[in-house]
Image (cartoon, rainbow, N blue to C red; front, side):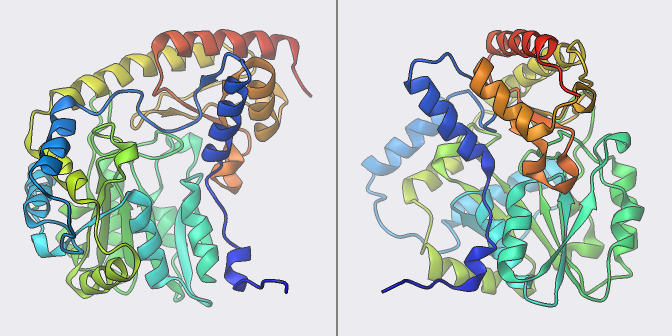
Length: 394
């Protein structure tokens, strides 16, 4: 008997960075020398005091269920950390501990997405935004993220896209895949404009909040009282504390939505791994030296990768101001982005991601993660230069 699936699953996409990772891993297993600049994962180990906190939690008997929203000390620590960084301390009752940042996207889009609804999302942007919007049957409306604007979103352009059908606006700064950071004045302008649209919810993806450079300030939407009653904040431990495999994230929900989010948690995952929550507590309340050291190292690598990319034939690269990604313009090479990314991996052993994997406006760009060693970045740039010098298209 043929199995039938719900039609919505035919619309669901995926994150191609994991497909590239799988291919790179396979090539490496075959003996190829692969330099992976594709996956967005810090190449640092989780700081030892965080690991020890999880081990201690296991030894202390924290083997059972926790509240679906997360243990109270961890939610309180999240609030204290946010107060320190944003100037606003949420109520711990509005915090939900989740198994990774994607979960918050999934829940928020599921709440507001349905046929007839429109959801605005950044393009190029994290691919799961559009994938989940299409899964719900809602209409995805791309908010253009333009190179000429420093890969920051435009308040005026964003506001112009809101219609009577708009249910949710997704924002991301510092941004994946571009490394763009939206300036404070532009965020303030957007928030002011959103006062005219009180029925539009906002999800602010701030997972890279602590990774900014050149004196650029991260401005959290949590700091704006006028939109706080409809704001969903996404953050977590994966990037800041090199804890990608721990699957630890959190979200802050307005009063009107937190119980709905809690019910989704109960129905879906019951609670987050208990020892991991104690690790997350140690991360927030313990020394922050490792975070500062990691960001400083990313900054050093950022300069290497930008200088190196701008020296390649047909390539230009704006200096990213946040996260750990560069999004070089490769239009003058004559290559289509995904074809170039594939050729670089197969022929030179350098894994990157084609810009179209991040949206319809991603053509003409590729994404490189500089969450890899300076030595590997320099080796990758040398290989890319040799390739582009001999395999120019167009």
